[in-house]
Image 1 (cartoon, rainbow, N blue to C red):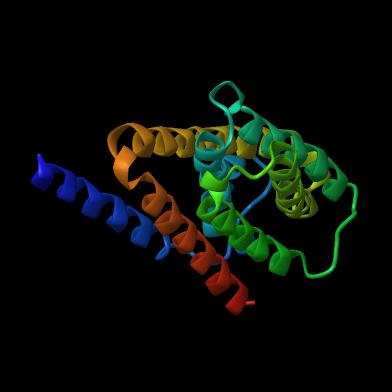
Image 2: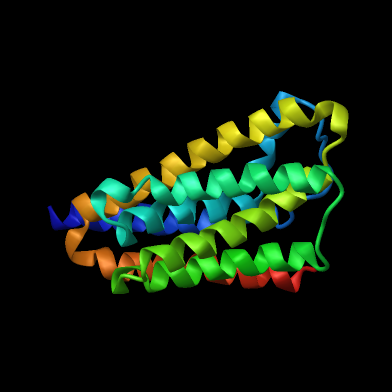
Length: 200
């Protein structure tokens, strides 16, 4: 049994390391005018880590019946700010702030077992999601916004579900190691955010 758990732990660690080896920048070199392009876009490292981290944090930090609040808050803030971004509003150093949001989510995972007040956690998620949404909206032509937005929302939901599933798997299968696994994921996510910021 112990050998089986050791294999699973190594597999989980390898998955975290592989995430860190993917493309560093999510906002360059892609189309933004179709459903398919919207579906593919969130697989950039910054978006992927943020969305998965929200799912894991929601399982770890929120009451069981409120786990859905984290992903729902992210998606609502994402789409509202994407509409604002498509209308032409942006903020200085947006890409830098998006990278910092990945660092923020890493920090939230590290302290997730300390029971950060729900409202504060959700507010931080909303602010970070708004940054991602502004970037989505700013790069989307008016004629392709609906299809592109539908695509990135579907993938966002899937990535959140993946994060929730990861959080539940950690809680159910690695209960004794849950705290340090969450810290490991948090440091991995935060480190990736620092790396993304260094590439600006």
